[in-house]
Image (cartoon, rainbow, N blue to C red):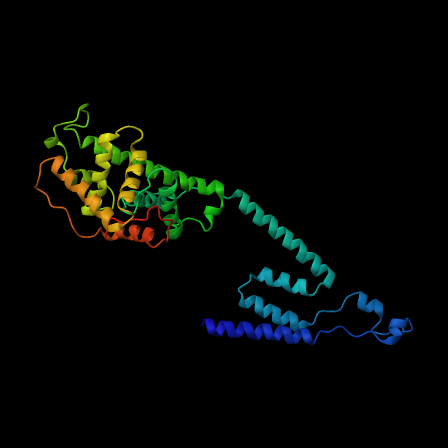
Length: 330
């Protein structure tokens, strides 16, 4: 059907071009140019100046083309009137209509509602934030590094965002505000769960006996609750490092000290992935021996789940700006 429509449109356009070749205005003679032409001649200069009648073949072809394009009957009539008008008037009308169209577009642009981040987009941002924060690829939590990773993921997947919204500062600021809030909320959750893992009750002021602490598996489950992350050795090793740092720096500088501790691990391991992994496992083993009841659980030794792996891969292959040069997975 579309092929037949295209062929018909081509035929209509061809008919219009052929009609135009037949509508050339009469040439002025030498006598007309010198002023010696008979005033009664049908080709006088004044006759030409008054306008040339429109070739009806063009009108007919244009009408057929307009009907083919499903223009309304009043629009087809207006087209016929337009084609029969003097060229100068047609040009004036086209320019006027162009300005009028611009005014209408301007009204639409100025009257459109202010940009707001959609509910679906915000849901996706808050879904990806925990996976980014808990990724084994991350070793810089403070500053803009981790935020850039999440925003790069948003730019890649879009999540129904308007095209080029990141180039409109007023609109992109609203996206960044949700990104910052999502990461802040997750950081707060991690820190609170670590603090609560050291107590029998959340409201207790003092830490419980070591045997009463949550073991690393219980702590990891509490942290990933409500997220798409899964509990495994890689995640537990990262959380074990966090708990070790928290025991020494439980205050406002906790995340700063996390960055310092991770930088120290990289230096001691010479940025060698296997050596860094070994150090993380040593911290995990120490945590398992120290906190909670020993035994009764077994950590998953397999790789992270598909969702977390996708985030790790995005960072690892530099699709997003990597915030780390090491990996827990040797």
